[in-house]
Image (cartoon, rainbow, N blue to C red; front, side, top):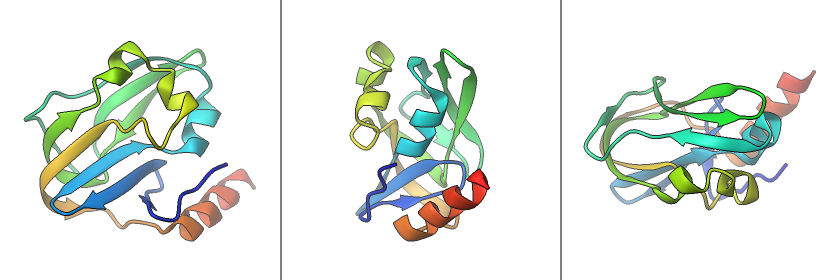
Length: 126
């Protein structure tokens, strides 16, 4: 399980990268490995609003369909269109395969450091 120290994480298994006024959100390496081979991604549109703790899209694997939750409230300013054609890219490079970028962030979920997220995942496995 790869965890990148420069990123923050949430307990619903999304990673968060804050760059100035924009927050980038993706699915963690742990989440994609648990889901298995991803075959479909459903994303919001640019201009859509997202809210803390609410699903903004979903991923479909050979096992199941799982929601992807927003760790922030704000407005989607960009989506990763590559994922619509290549959902398997999430399995190949989860930390490069971001889902959405959000601007005008008004609220953030409590974010975890890499070490805190790793401890959380370990506790979930017990």
